[in-house]
Image 1 (cartoon, rainbow, N blue to C red):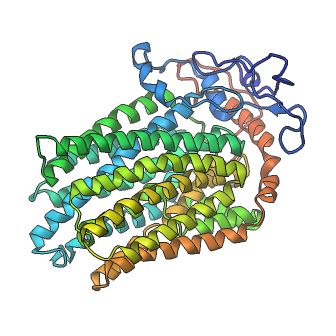
Image 2: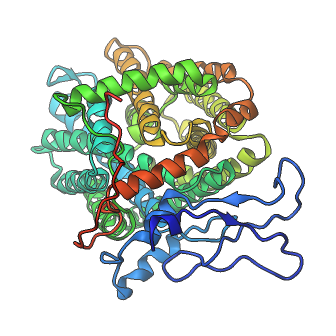
Image 3: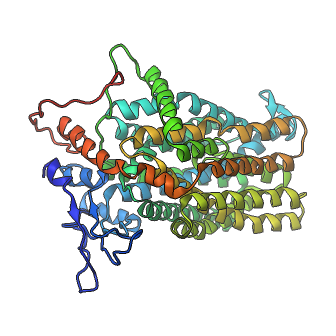
Length: 564
């Protein structure tokens, strides 16, 4: 199949009421024809006959040689993670890859609550108490200081990662290598003990940084699934549901084993959590990045004499100027992200684990129960996100979710006043509400980001959005740490998180109407697909087809450089 064949415009069936139906995808996930029905023809829903071009992920799948397809005896692994496009009924390999990838990240993130709590207890034991100094900081600040270090480092180096993704064809390699580093860093934490807790703290920081970089790589693939924000809402909510189900099953397993006749200690439970999450990461990361994600062509070439790091910063500055000048809604959304905690940054986790460990005085198993309540509440939250994105649009859905999160967090700070049984029961109740807010907020955020960005620049703008989400992501945990180091109650440190969420909400009010923002970028979709078709032809499809055949390059075409 040629690029021209893959990018051909497909007409949708006129009606499904005459007995016709969308064709089912073939075994490799592609459909023989598009299956997006025009079921009403009313303005605003389906504008007559829709024309639909294949998404980049669909093109990449169709053009793949199949050389690195999973062997048949392993394919059962991906069945629970397959997500059909709600309109075309096509199952894309990269959509399955996203679902498996976030399902690996979930348990790895969750292991931080087990390991982090045990680590702080070991630090406190070495220092002589939670308010005593160890390595120059209070033992109770160990986890939050680590989160600050990771956040600042990620913000400084993210332009380099973005430049590698944009200016080389190593996007898949970056995703694979960062996943490997994450798994190794978490797996090594099974050696956690009173003698090795600081080494595990370093591994935790390395793994946290690699996880953020990995998320940047996977986010670059996200817009390639579809340009339709309703379809994107479907994808992101399903990905989150998969993550929360796997994360919940993982947490349940750890809790059941820890409460079994084995009667594991806090330290043994933390080791178990690290080992199991690393094993899950090996399976899901390995499968998705070996068999499901495809290579991508570089989008730009370096200008003569330039290097990746300076190019990354220059591109970041140029893209920021471009967005701020031309796209009002996207500008204010990105500014709002400066104050909204990012899902993968571990900010909320670090604050919550510290608060529950030293203020509410919960042990590792009790914190695991809190996590489990949150996780299973995430699932209805993700479903709410899917419905609200459709009913009130992704922008309003994101606003409402932020307000809910801020309100529940403020209630925790205001009503959980100590370490009594009543306080712990309140924490369990609030955990379910926080879970709904979390499950609602982050799929809405992803859907909104894709809806607002101009097509053809998704990779660089998604990198910019990731940068804005991370560059000040360390600020809430920094404020919490400073307050804790100065003897201020952790309740006030926790309450500061609500302040940041409210500030983020207020900035979203400046975005204007969602419909106007979408209309501003709608025309760029076809331009992007046509341009991508040209660039892929230039690169001989070597980003998609993994065999070694040499093909003749078309003449008269070239990739843009940074000086263009």
